[in-house]
Image 1 (cartoon, rainbow, N blue to C red):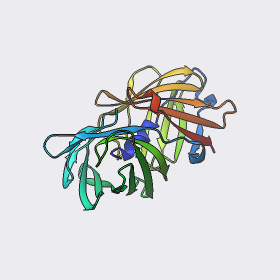
Image 2: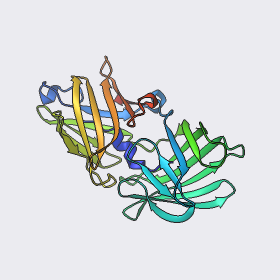
Image 3: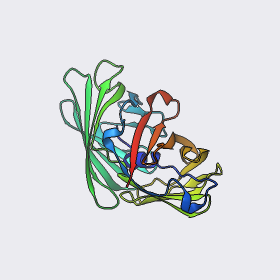
Image 4: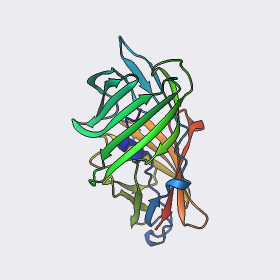
Length: 263
């Protein structure tokens, strides 16, 4: 279930800082997503029985909640709500909101053999650009209906950030801007948590980071103090790209890799 449309954008976001002068930072510049070189599948989530007729969602991040298939809105993650409405046999229409504002609308289809769950989403990013994303999951456990564990096997048209603009406003400090998300964060690599700011960023989201080398940084995304995701960003030897490898807490064996190319 995609409950974190802007979430994932922020999970790719890390700040870096080094001892070199700001103008000499290897991170300075504009970096664009290279979807062909990225590996976006392999993560799992689980639907289990919740109270009464409801279901429970869990993926290892801060998204852990109960919901019904009755068209009502249920609190999901941060300031988000989600609703599911039956749209036919093994088919549901969904809607995600942030503080009452629609973020995206989705359409879920469970295959007749119960082994494949396909999700399609349409929405608009803060910059006004529209996106369409299709995700396919295969059943890992469970025998019927939605209940069970599902693993991502295909992602088409990811809605995450398409580019980063990285600048160094001062020595030892860098700023990351995500133009399509209108989100940013700025700070030094001192181990402290720094706020992530943007119109679709949930209140209470922070990022803490630690330099492993001038071209490598480990970061931790939190929501209201609870770890949401962890990752490592590394600039390639030729300086032409950087990779962002991230995972949810307790799921280091389900890493995804996103590659950004210097423009």
